[in-house]
Length: 66
Image (cartoon, rainbow, N blue to C red; front, side, top):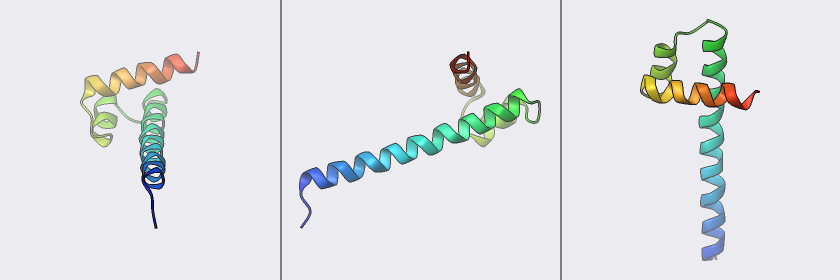
């Protein structure tokens, strides 16, 4: 029998996986843009984001590498 804490823990794990996958996609697309393989517009499209939102994430990934 499941209790509430098990359900909460399961949901937290699921959310963590989803966030990790999203972060991995953004980091991969950012690397492709930085290497000149993809244009930011194409990367944003592949990430299902607006160009402005992707460029903000791109800035964040560049800043985190400094």
